[in-house]
Amino acid sequence: MDAALEPRQTINSFKNGILIFLVGFCLSVTQFVMVRDFVTIIYGEEVAIILVTAAFFSGLSIGYLFSLRFSQRFFKVFALVLGFLHLTFPFSYRYLAAWTDALGDEQGFVLLLLLFVYALIFSSLFAAFLPRLISYDNEWSPELRLKIFYTLELLGFCAGFAAVGWSMNKPVSAILLLYWPVLGAVLFLATGKRYWTIGYFVVGLIVGFYLDDLDKASSAYLYEKKHGKHGAKVLYSVNSPYQKVEVIEDYKNEKYLYLDGLLNLNEGDLKYLNFYIARIPAELTRPNNALIIGNGTLSSAPVVYPFSKRLTSVELDPGVLAAGKRFFTSQDKLAPLKNWSLFVDDGKHFLWTQTEFYDLIIMDIPSPLTIQEAVLHTREFYSLAKERLTENGVLAVQLSGPLQKNNRTPARVTAALAEVFDEVMVIKSSKADRSFAYASQKLPFKKEDMKNLTKGFEPRLKIISPDRVHRYLKRAVPLSINELDLVLRRGWERFTDRYFDYD
Image (cartoon, rainbow, N blue to C red; front, top):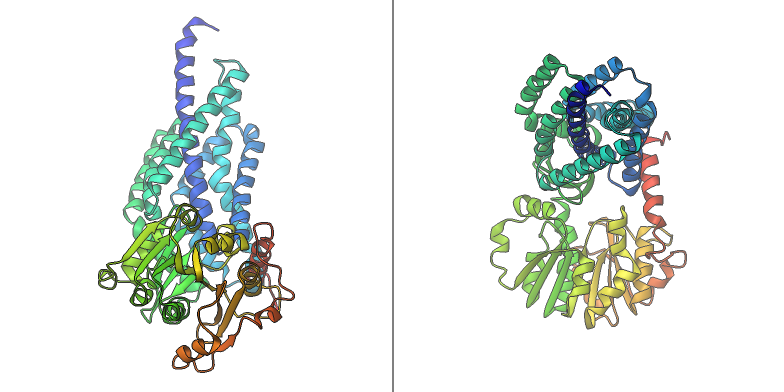
C-alpha cells in the first residue's frame, strides 16, 4: 500500500467502524418497533408474534443476499429512499393496515404482503452493510475485518437494546425521536450526500414535532376501522417490557384495555368479571389472607378487600398497572385499603419465593393466547398454587369462555384444575359470557351457597357441582407445560378466521 494512502485508509476504516456500530443500533431498534407494532396490528396471539418475527428475519436474509449485488450508486439511492420512508413510521403502515380492512376476501393476502414489504424496509437496508464493509474496506485481512465489524455491529445492537430498555413504559415516539437522528448519521456516513442528509433532518424535525399527534391519530384510526370502535380516541399507549398497552375510548366514552392489539377488558365488563372472579369467592370464603394474581387494572382489589383481613396483589406489567390506576381504578378506591400490598412480579416467581399461605388465590389473567399466559393456566402452575393454599383454600380462575364438552380452552383449563384439586365447581354466566372455576382440596362452600349468593345478580346462573364437572372433561386434554399446542392451534384458527374465512 502507498504510504501516502495509509492515513486516509485508517480514517475510512474508523468511519466504517462508527457506521457499522450505528447500523447495529438501528437494527436493534427497528426490530423492536416492527415486532411490537405489527403484532398489535394483526392481534397479539403467539402465531402473530411468530409471523412478524419471521417476516423481520426474512428481510434480513434478503438484505444479506443482495448486499453485494448492489452498485455503490444504487445502494446510496436505496439507503436514502428507505431512510425517508422510516420517517413515516409508525403511522404509514397503520393507515395502510386499516385500509386493508375494506378489501374483503383479499384482505389477508394484502395484509401479509404489507407485512413482508415493511419487513424489507425495516431490516434489509441494515443487513446489507456488514457484507459490503467486509468486502470494500481494505486496511485489514477479510478475516480480521469480519471479526472487527461484526463485533462493532453487535456492540451497536446492545446499545440499541439499552435504548429500547430506556423507552419502556413510554410512547413509541420516545424511541423514534432517539432513533431518527442515529439513522440520519448512518445515511450521511454511508452516502456522503450532505444536502440529502440535511433534507432528511429537516423532514424528521417537522414530523417529530407532530409525532405524538400522528401516533395517536393513526392508532385511533386503526381501532376504528379494524376493531369497530367508532369515534375511537387513544387515551394511553406505551410499550411495556412485555407488550404494547393501550387504553381506547369510544364515542360512548367507554374505555377498553388492549394488550398487543387484543382486547383484555372493557369498562362495562368489569362489573361482571369482578363479581364472579373476585367478590363471589371472597364472600364465600371470607379469607384471612387473599392473593390476586393479575388484574393490572386493580379493579378487583376494592371488591375483595371488604371480605378479607389481608390482601396482596401481584402484577407483572408496570405499564398495565399505570393504565389501571389512571383509567380504571381511581386512587380514592385504593387509598382506604390499609392491609393491601401490591407487588410488581411474575406470578410464578412470587409463589415460588413466598412462604405465606393463602385462603384464597384469584387468577385474574388474560386468556392463554401466548405461551407466557398459557403457562399460568397449566396443571404445573396450579400445583404450585396448591402448595401455597391453606387446607380448605380456594383457587378462582376465569375460563376464557363457556365450559362445554369439548377440547377447547375452558375444558382444558378445567381439566388441568381437576388433575390437581379434589373438588372443582364451575359456573356458567351468560352476563359475563364465560365460565368460572373454583378449585380446592375441599371447597368450603356448596352449590346451594353459590346459588343463594348469586340469585339476585343472575337468577339463571348455571352451577356445575364438583361431582358433575368430570362429565364435561371426557374429551379434554389437561393444559400442561408439555401440552401447549392449544396456544398455536387457537391462534392459527383465530388468525385464519379473521383474515381468510370467506364464508
